[in-house]
Image (tube, rainbow, N blue to C red; front, side, top):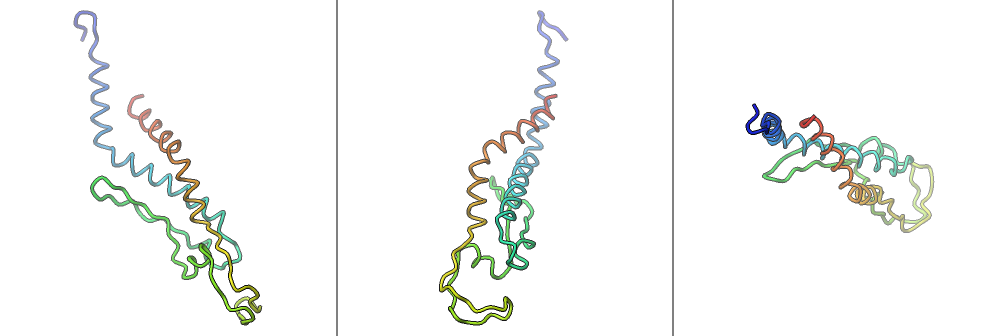
Length: 143
């Protein structure tokens, strides 16, 4: 449909693609959240000590939830001693622990900060990660 040498078909197609993108914006944001959580869980598992029983195996990602304009996804570990490995803990030197077949030597065991360090790392990388996801999604809508 050309009017005075201007073809509006491409403009209409662009408008229709924008409308379609707006309908699916929740999906785009959820994909961003899931990608960030997947990267976080990979990083935190790498940093989790292997000599801590089930700790490495018990990292989980929750579903994405939406409340108003806020989207939430959590990376959690419900192992009862996870917080002690993360932040450190006191112990009684000389006490025998049958589970490890040893006597405790130190009064303080420093934390590993596997979640803290990983979350900071992903937070720094998030803008580039989200930009790539959005560029890919826009490419799907505006071929």
